Image (cartoon, rainbow over all chains, first blue to last red; front, side, top):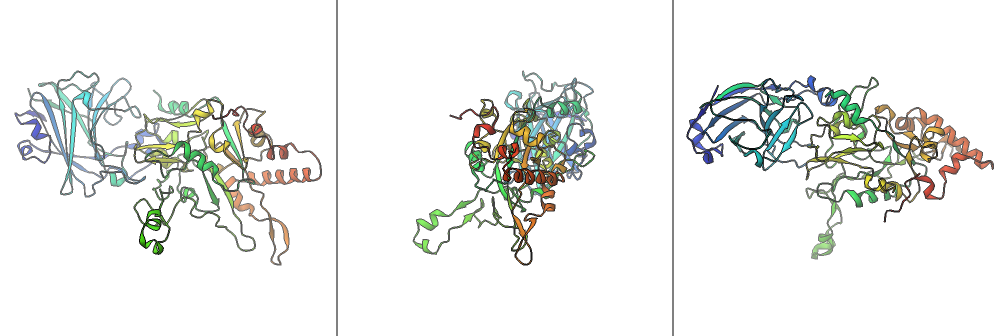
Length: 215
Length: 346
């Protein structure tokens, strides 16, 4: 898959509801429950649970204009979980993840010598998180400003529409590199709040899939 | 990093602090509850929390029905999945309609009643079943059970945390790193005592911190220090001069709550001896009012020997002979109870 270079207004793209998005091709990605057997060492409690992975597919649109890379995620979700009002409630969430080093595993969120970088949008938060991880239990949430990362989410007709945008050329260390003409490997994840999904209890697209950022 | 050994590192400590609570002397006054609440849980999002609490047992307890919500380990040491609690289970943040009753013309018709956080008439709250006894007249019975985090030696919360945000200090105190916690609440599910509470304002989980800023200065935790019934002893389990050691290790009359949960808790209870039961003709018998099988459900089979020791030592003292155990249990000087944690808080 190619992440096309299109001269579209990045400000307009920031709202996933904007008609401008109809000019960008959409790809449907199948999701499956994250395999929790791998998490036994970090949480024998979580690893023995089942029933997660309620979201089964995700529609993705991606583009860049040489300065900003935009990713639009849309998925059907009959329950809007955008606030935690009780002790047993969880919020809907979505993430896009990239390897910092070739060969990093998406399932394990990297490893000690192979970091991964992720963008995390949560329906109950104002701003996204820029996440670094080197394997399970190591993820660190960072403020998005230093990465030039923004996100917006809208709930329309029982669907979430989330747009991530990031300045391609940034100075922060330990963020994924995005260069026109280069490869960019991506994985996706969704959490269904009404199903108590959080941490590794999620739907995932599988291992990283390599894309080309059009020159 | 080997994650399994990382968990072992997080769960280990050099020593272990422990609290002993004599249930024969607890009168359910809630001084421990209030002492804790005043210090630690008056921040936004903590209104429902009672890190220290006292309930009437047998009963649904606090948080509501905690004993049937799973968690802990099975006999083979495998993790047992548990359930979350909601804000009503956790005691809610009930408010009285004082304004309606006192400041309005129709106040005569308004009834003073607690309202739930959503404004509705409360149907459950902290200590809702206070003093509701079990058994049948004339042999009704109950006992008060003060609780807090057990700072377990085999802490399931540490195992459960997928972010390795929970660890034991060298003194055995279990803490949740609020910078690492992201509120996934696997720890809440795993704790069979349900002594971890989610804070919806910070979106992180919190629990008893054993008043560590106090104990670091040699001051006993507030719940222990403020106990007006002087039911509590505090210190290191390996300190042979401490009352904790003598009651738990030497005399074996202080027992962990629900040892079958497999977490090796470090709050120990001197079980209630209770008064004598009546027979059908209204005559006192030699049986205890609280059935032994009830106490066994809480403190395990060791409760039989513990009660036998307590009864025998009490008789020995009644007979005019000295008893180190009875001297400990009635010790009048509070400093004797708290080992090196006798500094003043001010």
